[in-house]
Image 1 (cartoon, helix red, strand yellow):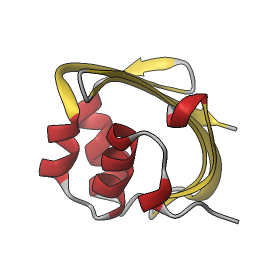
Image 2 (spheres, one colour):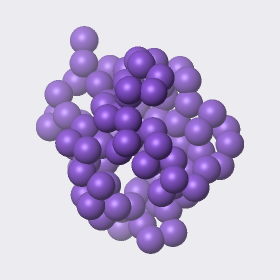
Image 3 (cartoon, helix red, strand yellow):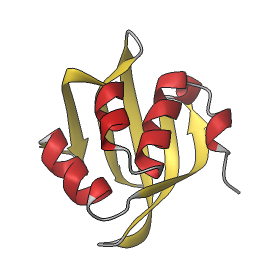
Image 4 (cartoon, rainbow, N blue to C red):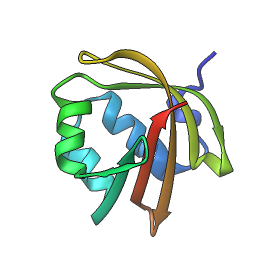
Length: 107
């Protein structure tokens, strides 16, 4: 059973998920700090390149299954046109209402 996006506890993480699910690159960039970093399966990646490949050019979508740590940690059924659907974990570092780092990987 998934959690409705508008019920996610952390407003910044909620904005991140909404941006991904609506394929809204401007909203996605707006929710990140200018120097935001990220990792995928433990390897640091370039945020813009990764987001283009894994979200925007491949119709990425987050179906949130579970949240913890006040909404800063999610278990997500993530799907895109490249990889299909997979169970992933996401952890967010939020500073001043923006995501400064996110880490994702297989759950």
